[in-house]
Image (cartoon, rainbow, N blue to C red; front, side):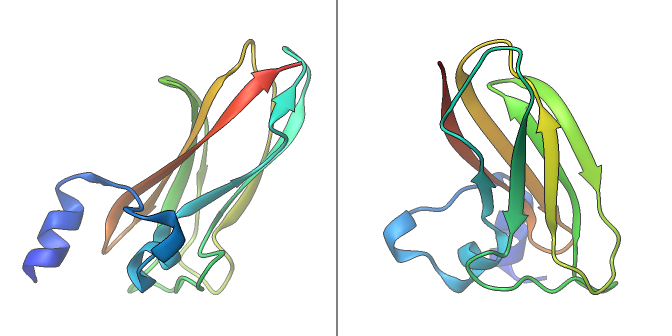
Length: 123
């Protein structure tokens, strides 16, 4: 195991510079796609897509294991994914009690956990 892989597994990884992502970041960055403003308590769709910028392999030897969604530090939901030829992309139907930061976490079986966030405001 290389030192780079050891470092990736020892932390929650983030994109260093969104304007200049590395190939590793492009493959693992969880892209959150949803409205920026929602009604408190009203359901809406939130899609999290890992590998939107560059396809992530999804096979038994290298795959995304799960995608979690949080509001700030409050766990909202999880999607467990299978290691088969499909896009690591999930649409959750959620309702938020208030504004805050939606945080997505995706776990790659080789390259560890990656996160991103998107601020959601209340209408």
